[in-house]
Image (tube, rainbow, N blue to C red; front, side, top):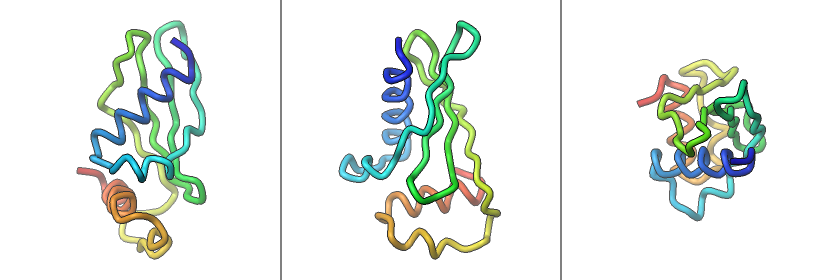
Length: 102
């Protein structure tokens, strides 16, 4: 498996998990994909123009760990006006993540 393979697996996992329509997938960008200690890849996914990112582990067998990490400098309840320019599915997902997920 390559870093590109791991990135594709992670991106597809998130898009499917969140039920993001395929036409909105282009908003997401792989920020980094690196191999860690002979056992898995760490893949960081974000949206251009936003500071938020998701960090996922993809194992060598192609499995994506469903327990990913969300990282954002924006505090819950800080407002989401900057999300108005994004498709509804993406804006809702980011707002939900910023407020603790689920």
